[in-house]
Image (tube, rainbow, N blue to C red; front, side):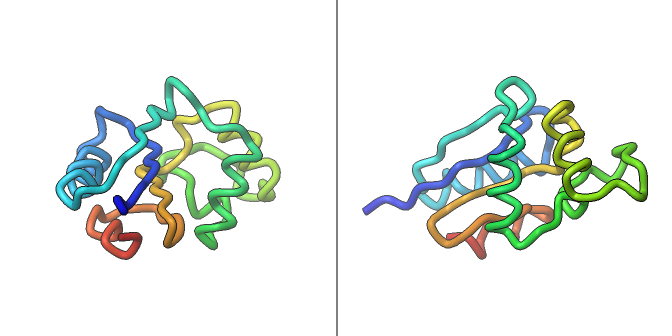
Length: 110
């Protein structure tokens, strides 16, 4: 049985490209979602972060301008409104969900 993964991917990001290459080299069947063109819903983000044991703030890009006092709901709303705020790449497999920065973290999901 072939392993499967879904990656929230930005093709312009070198880390995201590296993770995608690692998945493909491992023989994983990969579903690629260009999350800037096809953004996940707020509920999907909440599900992924919950499965990854990440708070929404943990999955914000470092340069994201979200008020420091914003709660998880506000951060999710901001990410749903502007998916560029989401750190990448986010990978989901049968073993879990992980924010794969650095790219080598994807190995924990294989």
